[in-house]
Image 1: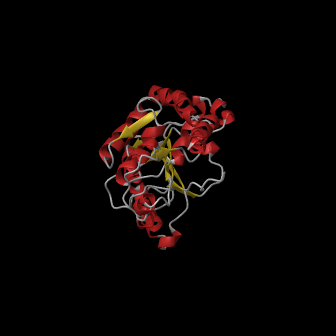
Image 2: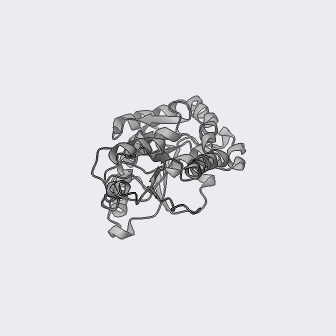
Image 3: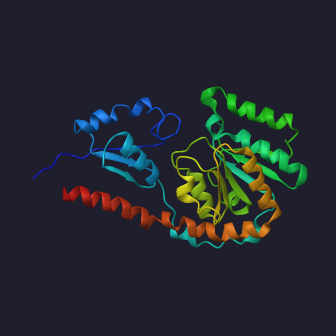
Length: 272
């Protein structure tokens, strides 16, 4: 006996315009409530459990699931990465150059830190906002120039393989206004790289074990960002602690763990 095909909406990013659970629902997702009510959609799939819970409330459905959008291999998670190869003062940011990534927060913190710790550097990996005539990219580069920071803040551009960057950095920094999952955070943790991130929707709190594999700080608290980076520079043992725990924190994103989530969803569908 044939059964009707089941259809699920997979959210690529936050389902709201501003990443906040009570924010305006993005135009592309506004038909979802009606489609669920009419049976045209069977359910929702988000990249994190937190977003799945928020989506269930906003769209009034109990068919909302959190399944990661990516995974890490056993080879990645068992690779030994000596803490000794991490360069003191070397920070990285892996994001596109767009306004919601709030790279100016990171640049301002690095400029302040460089006055006390001259070994500090920042490498920014990510493509420019060409769709926006590079307005954000140009503004960020002007900010670096205004602070005479070209010698220690570098716009590297997009790179296919960031393994070396993750494995030599003292920490990765993420200061976005919101994310859909924050894949770069997971990649960093999988390479044993500590992460300092705003505690935002969605992703960082799911991936980072706070104060074990990195640090979550209040959203948009630039002073807290500065103080946390300063703490890492002044306390090498804290960096070692975070680095040693990072791959452990990422274990829940092993291929078999993610595959089990998909298999559970598929099995439940088959039983209906």
